[in-house]
Length: 435
Ligand code: GDP
Ligand code: MG
Image 1 (tube, rainbow, N blue to C red):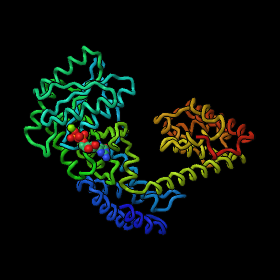
Image 2 (tube, rainbow, N blue to C red):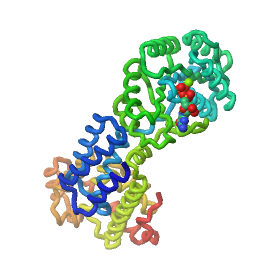
Image 3 (cartoon, rainbow, N blue to C red):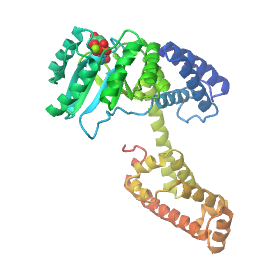
Image 4 (cartoon, rainbow, N blue to C red):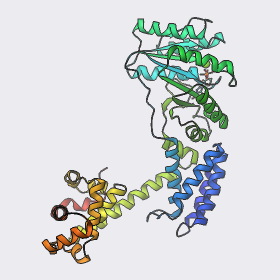
């Protein structure tokens, strides 16, 4: 997959600007590549459409090639599709918090029960592992062995009814002062009514705060179907995607979130009991695309772009050519994506002062209107703007004389401040940026 995409993007690279045909061609290959990574067909279709829509006609950042620009968009949309970072366990204010692990046989429920217990224990919690997989004697033994390794107690009642075991475990936790109960349930090779019935009974009895579905990333499309069924029948709160240490590209991760709407909370990355980590959509996107290095490159290019803007600003300040048009430009940038905030952070001391002058959206539209109602000359030499001009501008922009006055004052302050910086020795540092 990786090679194929790289190839596509290389082909785009040499062209000047992204045309619709370019994007179409690239997206055809992106679609193929995603399907090869075992991403759900419908998800791929929606995804490609979205990226296409965003790519065509988009301005290409100066320091990026058109191909890189497309990668950037593909990557951003992928991260968005997988949702933000949400690897929080829903801890109940009234202990014990009950977590129920569900999933097919072999997905990694028992192992991840122990991993979660281990993780929560390190966070100062007192977990209890509960053996509700009663069908294989070895399953109980497995949980006990794991519990032993991490020094977490394991509750079991042998082959007793799982609902009874689960209920009894809550009492046990309360009496022992244990605040998180992790219920390891039995899986089946395939989803069936018996399995779902049993899980629903346990759910009804213990009312878990979190039902986490454990799915094996290696199973690709099947993982997505499994997630869809479990979510439909039982209702799940989140997903643990396991075996991401294998060589799967993890296309399932992209689909599972899109199809169920449930966040992937954790990633299992090995058999050891500390091989669990929060799920990071951005890392997953790079993995699915197979282009971590390319993305680093883009980030660097982006930084260079910011630096260039900063240098241009510096030039203007030095020559004291900073006009109301620049002022407006900057405000619009703040509104659009906030790079001025970071730009200003690069000017020693400036960020702090300007933060006090924060602009909200409504003010912003007024500022725009006011400046647009000025003549070019006025924008360059605001000192020209006396009372009668103020009235004219206020009228033209649908604002008040006071507002026009306030804006001019703000601009004047900013100019004054910038003059100070222009003379300051630190100015040469601008653009190198402290992050
Ligand atoms: P369960 O049937 O759902 O309880 O699955 P288990 O927890 O017993 O795990 C099944 C097998 O998968 C075991 O051999 C585990 O060691 C292995 N396993 C579980 N999670 C991971 C993982 O994240 N990475 C790898 N490589 N193996 C895992
Ligand atoms: Mg098990």
